[in-house]
Image (tube, rainbow, N blue to C red; front, side, top):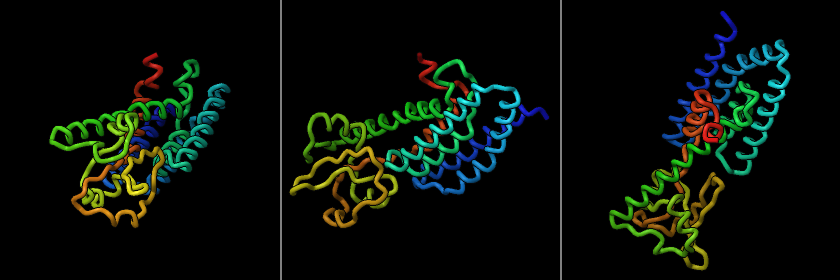
Length: 247
């Protein structure tokens, strides 16, 4: 068997585990760490063979670019998770991908670094989630609901809020706390909108006692980011970086 015939196996392995992780992310926003361990164990040996072939062929630039992409991916992904910009599972997925993807084209700037291409694709695809939130708000209003009339919010926060928060019954929030974070709080007895780019792992239960089950509350729906990482990865393998194609 030609060594080039082995490389597609790595892609299939990664896709298999990303699909499983995406299912778990949609269902409960929690992903078993074993997925990332198994994905790395079963895929990286093929990457190791690929790196060995690059060294044997003397493709020094390609090797350097792989090292840059891998180090950048690991450091940025760890930072995203550490500072709460993404969930821990999202960071682990990006780390495994950054270690596994070897540059194919060393001439074009964007596809040169696989991690950067996958990250850009992921971010662009994830913008659709804001559209989903906006559509839910429009449907809520069409059904007679009112947004932002009962809360202290300026014009700019209101505009951002249309794309980042929904209004649901407190009962639903309690039943599906894995899907939402509370986007409101009381300051000096006044309800204000809380827009936060950082992911909160836990809610302060003492603040929830003031609500009744039928109360309507503002929530931030938590994005199933692994789904968008999966889409970003598929697009990268099929076409490269979205921005490179646009440019």
